[in-house]
Amino acid sequence: MLVQVHGCFCHDHGCSLSRLPTSRTAFWEEKFAPNRERDRRLEDAAEAAGWTSLTVWECETKDFEVLERRLVAVVGTQRLGMDQPTTATCSNEVASTIQPLSG
Ligand SMILES: [Zn+2]
Image (cartoon, rainbow, N blue to C red; front, side, top):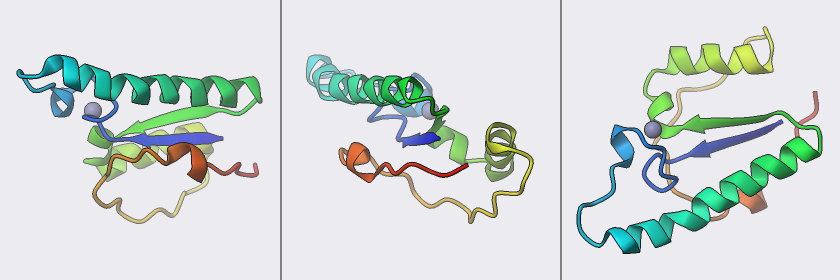
């Protein structure tokens, strides 16, 4: 399974946390376009390899119980045993940190 956790702003989620600044919009669009492209490429690669792909957005981490129910619905009925998530960050190193999970 591929689980990508995205910062709403850096990955242009479209929610209230991802509103682009009103100035230098071309700069921001150019900055975020590669993130969206990489996200899509990783999803496509995962799906082509037969993996389930799941994206968790920063804004979805605000309510841990809702997030946990969503993850359990995707992963299975077992309790995930996750700790409360900490502050999300924007990372350009996502691809290098992805590891396949068994099961
Ligand atoms: Zn969001």
